Image (cartoon, rainbow over all chains, first blue to last red; front, side):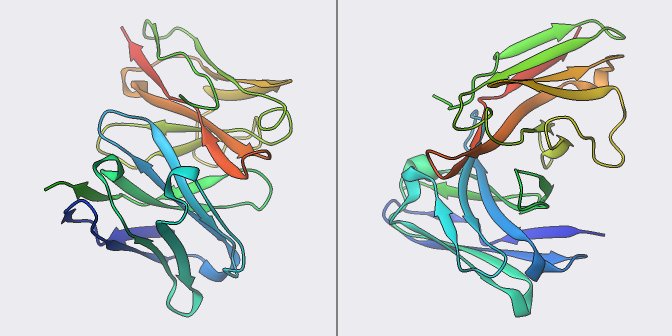
Amino acid sequence: EVQLVESGGDLVQPGGSLRLSCAASGFTFSNDEMNWVRQAPGKGLEWVSYISSSGDTVYYADFVKGRFTISRDNAKNSLFLQMNSLSAEDTAVYYCVRDRSPVGTEFDPWGQGTLVTVSS
Amino acid sequence: QSVLTQPPSVSAAPGQKVTISCSGSTSNIGYNYVSWYQHLPGTAPKLLIYGDDKRPSGIPDRFSGSKSGTSATLGITGLQTGDEADYYCGTWDNSLSAVVFGGGTKLTVL
């Protein structure tokens, strides 16, 4: 079974940092592009970041550029999101998502998500 | 404000058909494949449609996708109460070098 399991979500103070992890199983992780997508309370889905299968290419949403860093360890089937300078607006459930195809967005599957709460 | 525009809500009776629109531009829908996702509260979003009009295995043929120009449409026939969820369109935007989603449409099955 193809599965993604996120971890690392927590309550953090404004200005703080957090590192999210995503453990992948059931597929050849090193072959697939990966993304982070978030959903703030009461809001819609919001793409955060992309990383190529090799890790050579990354993209970020404008609102996280310079603050968040996406990375992966293909030997450990793991995806990461380092989040710095967090603010209340970053409070959200963060989903780890596989993109099944290099042509177009085929986000499948999605992890169950990990909750990040930024508050003093 | 989302790059892709969806109606905030749609509703229809059980057994009926509903369509959800997703409007974009030449830098996103007009040039790239569109996908659709179903999101039930408390669960992980699920891929419903990819490549504009293709269904992953396990998705019933009650769900369909189409695209014309810079707009895409999700169709759901034979509505069931279990279809009540939020639906999102998504695609890549060449100008932004980013994945963009619609704001989401809440489907109510009356």
